[in-house]
Amino acid sequence: MACLLFMHIPKTAGTSFRQILVRQYRNLGGIEAIYEPDAVKTGPERKDAPAYVGHYRYGFHQFVEGPT
Image 1 (cartoon, rainbow, N blue to C red):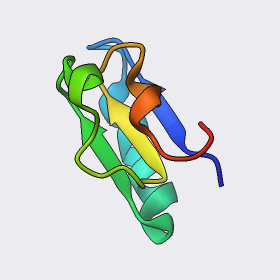
Image 2: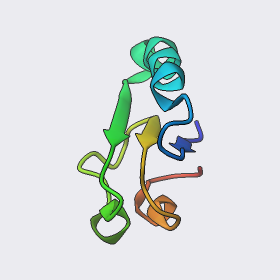
Image 3: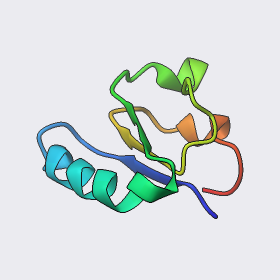
Image 4: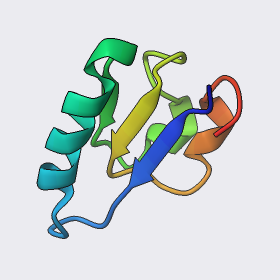
């Protein structure tokens, strides 16, 4: 299964969409919320989440296992 990356601009309904994703991905292992723009330098704590949401910069996809 491909991993979903939802990178959004602050103050653009990210919380509402994140709540929808939490419900949809609950049975698939949950989501990983990333709200640190510099996460692109270190990657996420959890590398196998089915979905990542938050405020991170382009390049974050390099740290995710499998197709995105």
